[in-house]
Image (cartoon, rainbow, N blue to C red):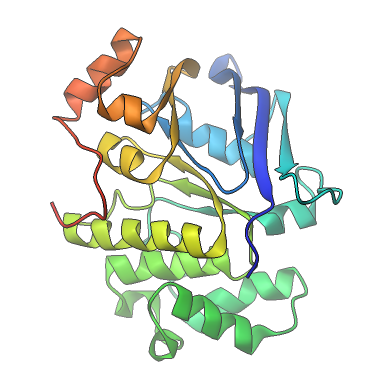
Length: 262
């Protein structure tokens, strides 16, 4: 598969529920093929940003658009359109709640293909399962027959099956134990490099974000606090007290190579 030709730009994104401002005027740009992290405490608005990008949260003001790299000048689809939803896929936090309990893996993976009118179902399902390290032996199992890590791999396969260029990752490993979390994070890193994907990842775990992401946006109460590189965050070269408090709350972290169970 060719390298990704699509990044994402968010300008002045604002999400309001009644009188509550969940996200206030957030802006950032993720270059094609890059990995971008969003961190903050619970209720900071980080997951709402992802939901607004893919149309699951109401966008009060602001804009979201895809960004092509220098080698691609094709017209990119508008946000909310069916082609946009095919290029931008989301992986949710809870692998137990995101899969239909009465559907087999085969049915779960075939559903997005049917929605988008993709014909080569057999080939795509086999490829998606291979991509996430499961293989055809899992195709006709039900979610209750899978471990938490296997379920999250199925959720990832469901996102990959449409061959997206941008993946939105909402705490994709927080519901998993440490050893399985490391396996899934290493898988995500391998997939990004091999398939040329662009990642936007939300997490409360600074070790996870600094491992997987190039640049990081820190949020608090819907507001942007600062943007910092993963290298600077790991070296504790940050500007804001709130970011320092997040680092202290994380109990220490390092940016390393491939993760192992902690």
